[in-house]
Image (cartoon, rainbow, N blue to C red):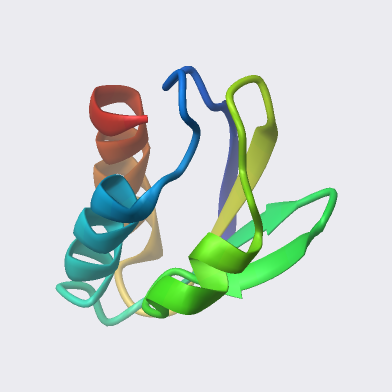
Amino acid sequence: MVAFHYTITDEVGIHARPAGILVQEAKKHPATITLKTAKGSADARKLLAIMSLGVKQGDEVTVEVSGENEEATAQVIEEFFKTNL
């Protein structure tokens, strides 16, 4: 398992559009991607699960990637977070 921490900088947090794009990105990879916050955790392939976390600007998210090509997948997802969130 590979994990990284990211503090959300987007002024509205993880809202519908970036969450949908994150789901599309996560579905491209065979590894399991899980978002964890103080409020709970969510599978990155499930839009409603991500939205239910209610992640706001300034919240820290831990992203765990496990399975096939986890290191490469973690790098791609971390870059996604830096670019979009």
